[in-house]
Image (tube, rainbow, N blue to C red):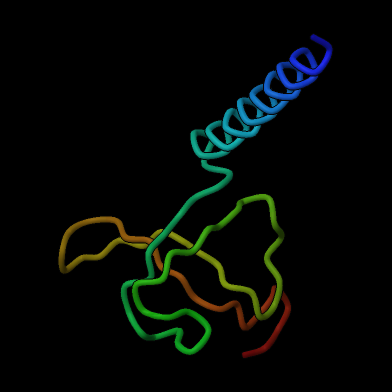
Length: 95
């Protein structure tokens, strides 16, 4: 009987842990803290391959050498697009 209770308790703890992790993941996605993008071009190869999926977080600070995402307006297609580029300069740098 004690063996059944241990196994049942383990399943309860595992279920609660998974539910909390899924909840945190969904919260991060809804609040746009964690976002997923697909790389559509080969402009960042070999670091980012074409059609690769990348995850970005707004909680990490921008630093030289890291990839950053930002929104731009594409006047040709008349829509807002997300760009992914490597940060080469920081405030105060001369480029």
